[in-house]
Image 1 (cartoon, rainbow, N blue to C red):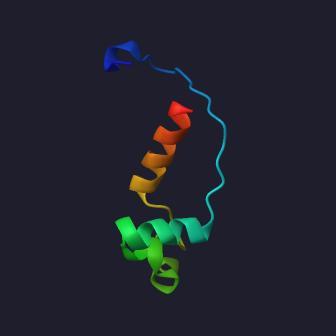
Image 2 (image 1 turned 135 degrees about the vertical axis):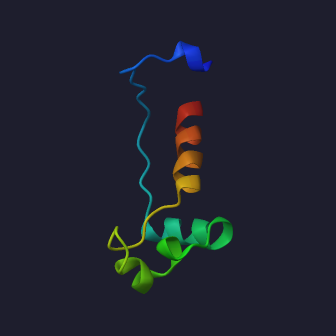
Length: 68
């Protein structure tokens, strides 16, 4: 799709995918090793109060689900 083919409020449904803390830390350890993805102690003091998935990882998952 091209950008001008999207409309405000348009919804795309995909199947779901469960991502575990281990999945997050394994991906981040290799591709995005920022503390909020790999260091539980430091991440617990951040604004999300714990480990969060990398935006790069969530984008990759979105692409996977979109294609499927």
